[in-house]
Image (cartoon, rainbow, N blue to C red):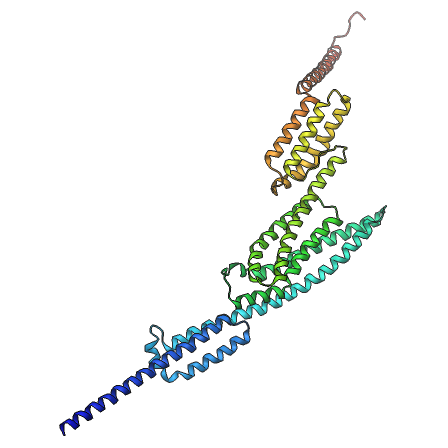
Length: 420
């Protein structure tokens, strides 16, 4: 009987332990099941690419919460330091943030779409204006009405290009301000967002069109130093933005050969644009000298420009005495008074130095050589004698005038002759 009681006790103990083990295993499985489903929802939020996906995830969060509501006490213990409620508060907040991203994208797409329409309209107007300007430029002789019309069209084209450039910059800023701040490694969802933004703004086409129209503008108009200085700044600022985003876009579009080729093409277009501005600046400076029959060696940078001027002045100095004195003097004054000091030095040199196309040292070299040239054409000693003689003549004239005035005054105050 005693042994039977012992056996019964052992059986009951085993059943109890078995029940505890099964219960424990059930709690463990519930916890793991919850964590697995919770993690799937977290990953879904990170990888969502549309607002609709986010809404579906929101429904699944509500289902998960309802599914494990009866196990709230268990999960409060096993999720420590989180609780059942704090876990759902956290994931729901994460979902709302992600929804906000897509709301911004929708708003941004609308904004970009509006900008894109405006850019397209201005681009079409520019094509028409460029065609009209070219047509007027082909006319051999231009009357006052033609010149006035041409000036009006050029002003309109310039205003249009500036407005369109600003719109394209707005697209770039709107699309990519956040993009330049993101980590270098993007997941598929983040890359897809970039694709959507770039395509919505027709980014590549509009950047290419901006550069192309600026180059066309230089070809059909004669730009002032102020115009070219402004264009140089525009290129510098725009190129700076592109250099920030270009490599990142190339990384995003890695594997899409057509897009990577287009990005490389835009890089080349920026270089071409800068080259055309520089060529226009140097051509206009060279033209100023040619108009005064001053032939300089070809130049395309600051060092070449300096060497060309120094070489010209050296040749002129060597030819003093060979050429007629009047001819040498005329060349000197045409170079200095009519070109260098009147136009090039005040209007062009600051632009060249500001844009690193010429250095202060280049400018000093040129003006030092001009000073040496002046010593040959109009020596300081000769000028000194000229001024001394002129001053002496003036003093003699003043003295004679004063002396004559004094004699007249003395004559007027002489007493009358009493003998008469």
